[in-house]
Length: 266
Image (tube, rainbow, N blue to C red; front, side, top):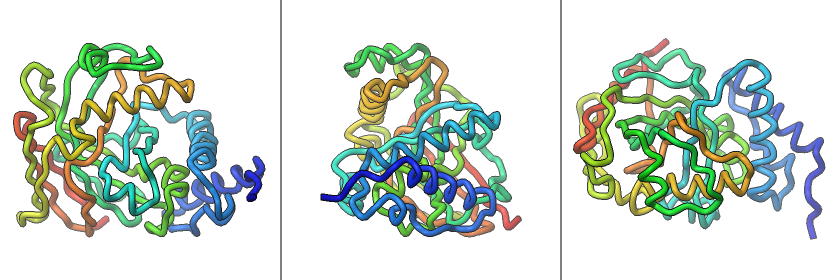
């Protein structure tokens, strides 16, 4: 039996990821520090250490993200459920922004539905009706996913690395749930004017609201319930696509509208 890593291993892994972030240079995977049998709990322990570090340094949590909502990606990383990470206010961008020069290493793009909460989700176990009642509005969004480990990752690596969070880009025209059926929305993504991907709301755990439901229950178990005002990045409506400097990104989500960004060369 492999013993659980001691706290010093968690601290070393967290510091390795912070150094990679500060230097914008990819590091070795942290699973070597956590042990070959590193699991979900170790990944979240490392993630929490860095969350505590960044909050003490003055960053503000603006929401959460759900990752690995695609079953095929879960299987690739040996997972049987999604994962979550923290969103910080300083990595939020607006529709049309230039997202270059942000310390990104090997960015990839996902097209997502962002859900903004009007009330807390703190009931422990929730229903989709609870999620609907708690939702203020939804927005079209892009997540710019990144890896401090150059995508040489296991599930424990990715969780420790804040679920691969890089930047997120939000639209600015709020849409109420009464105006859209999130399960059936269609999505088209172009990069530099060329068709890159299509998808729909059902690709995200059957419905982006299911993603919020899963996250609400998971964070209640963790002791940090979702709060009013948080933005939830619910997971990709398609796969992750690699980006290169100079890329122009444009997505359209039916009933939600367009969302764009430019990855500059500087």
